[in-house]
Length: 205
Ligand code: SF4
Image 1: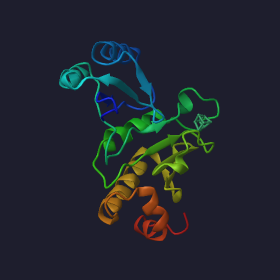
Image 2 (image 1 turned 135 degrees about the vertical axis):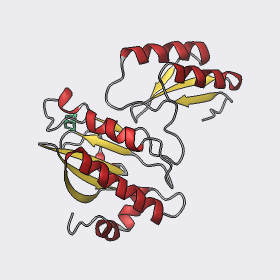
Image 3 (image 1 turned 90 degrees about the vertical axis):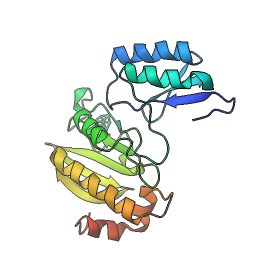
Image 4 (image 1 turned 180 degrees about the vertical axis):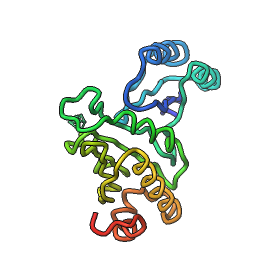
């Protein structure tokens, strides 16, 4: 992504949940050597290295990958998946969020879609990651049961990681088949809620 001053912003695609200290040290080092020495912590829980001069971009991308970091989360793709810390840290949590969010990251992050798709996981119905405002939201209900929402449209509850993954895969396939260019999944789902629920075999959400 190009900034108004002609430098590049390099956004990372991070495994959701927790960032190891070693990765943070690598980002700090690379930001000092290739960028302006500053990073931006995004609302979607990733990191951007700012102020990269065009002639240094290729070397930065190479070194990022050598150090186990991936650029991404831009354009018409499944973006950085967000999650709250869930039962690994929050006393209100009903489920662990990080393993599920990481599985969704492995399955779907950076997959090409008609327009950007944002996925958020929350460990209880308080929904601190605002699942209802994302294209796909997953809410922990306890005992590994999860409520899946698409653009706020309820698709019913799922039991276990596999069922959540399968549901989201079917939603993304429906989206890829159905959406006009550039239409966000959440807008399509709001417009075509009944068709989406029919596709997923949901009667009443
Ligand atoms: S959504 Fe629930 S589990 Fe997650 S941080 Fe908020 S209160 Fe805690």
